[in-house]
Amino acid sequence: MLERFLSPSQNAWLREFERFAAVEVAPYADDWDLREATPAAVVRKLAENGWLGGLAAKESGGLGFDATTFGLLNMAIGAGSGSLTGLLNVHSMVLKTLETWGSPEQKQRFLAPLVKGEIIGAFAQTEVSAGGDSRNLSTRFDERGDELIVSGQKSWITFAQIADLFLVFGKYQGLDTAVLVPKDTPGLTVTAKKNMLGFKSAYLAVLDFDGCRIPKTNIVGKPGFGQSLISTGALDYGRISVAWAALGIQQAALAASARRAGSRSTFGTLLADQGIIRAYLAEMSGSLLASQLICLSATQAKEAREEDALEQILQAKLFASKEAGDAAAKAVQIHGGHGCDESSGVSRLYRDAKILQVVEGSNELQKMLIGKEVCNRYGHGALQPAS
Image (cartoon, rainbow, N blue to C red; front, side, top):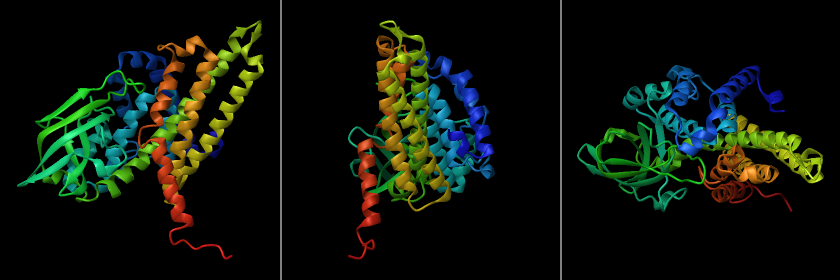
């Protein structure tokens, strides 16, 4: 269905993304999950295709993907491996931040290697006591001459185990600030985070900053820009990644369930001929259609810089990730015991769908932010209809 709303260029990219995912990702995703590792070879292929730098403007050496094409990439990869979309997510957030807010020196040193995929970027905001609430960030950047001393800890940082550059959020002179910290900075320790519920091959890690010294020139933008501009802008792309990855999970859950229903019999009848199973498939199909439309509306609003783009992106992340969880749960039911096996692709879909409801702001936070946008639109000084 989605194809009819896409441009010829977007449809061509989608076919290429799907071919790659079918050959290079989907056949191996279960094994990656069990080993809790994504092979360097597939990361290298994403870089060689230019897709790690796809969002970067052509003037920066990228492919100039619009938001919808970036979404299509996450959808295709997400149908094969939710974990791998985590790389597209965090790397792109760092890349777009530097492209938008980086100084000439920062761009010269870091942007080109990020676009080419020669180095991997990771987005380091979450702490044990602070996720979406920046007021509770405990990481500190203390000034000492021309340097900053970075102290604190970040948790559950996606692809941190193999990242070369971290975009780190914390407090500088009481202001929300973002800085760049290369992985080889003395005092930085990266500890693998194992046994996660989902995104098992997304190389999650804990970052400990014990008096790391970085030059003050590693501040991105200006002090005070950390949350209000840099994080907010980056998270638009992070949430687009999550929303479209959720479409991929819905597609994979529906396809696996339809195949199972057409091949498995109980009580002498194919599952596909049983009313309750047909009802599940109908609900999954309808939810996928609705999710596709809301995600497409969100990325088109982002591209057009529409006034309600933020609200649409929040809605897309909230709706698509919720429906991905519901679709994966139905897929587990249709597969029965096989769907509960950890080595089952359906089990992986179920676990990864739950992660999508938490990352880039939990779905509860999405509702809070959406509610704020709605109040701003209809109240708080907005014109009221005449009585």
